[in-house]
Image 1 (cartoon, one colour):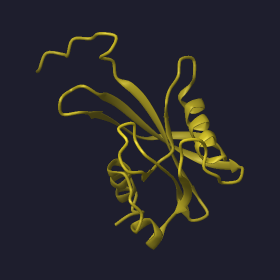
Image 2 (spheres, one colour):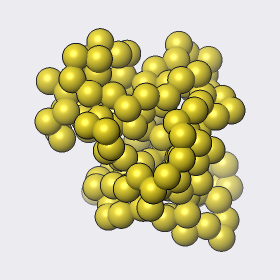
Image 3 (cartoon, rainbow, N blue to C red):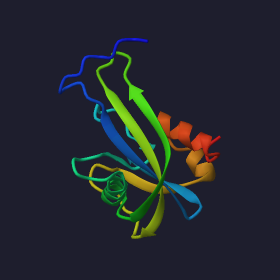
Image 4 (cartoon, rainbow, N blue to C red):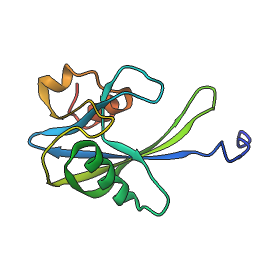
Length: 142
């Protein structure tokens, strides 16, 4: 077993919470770029958890801020670690199933577009790698 990486304030994992929202025969995706300025791709709505916020509150906040709709968080669908090859970044990703409650779909700040994606349209979209894997595992993207 490898020795753990030394913990310093700058070397702590981040917690990113995503929402899998299925409605209108599709799955909710947002199109936005990443922090490194890479080209925008489609992905699940997600946000980092903030101090004092429950995971379910993080799901609801992420979806409402990014898409304008309200959801109710359900069960955890998957948990995985994203650790860069050089070890400079470590993010723990939790993806929750969430149910549509109400609201009109519209892109929020820092989001280029939002969509209920399915079928052929989904296959033609530039989907972020981890979202693509998840959608394939769910049988929504082949």
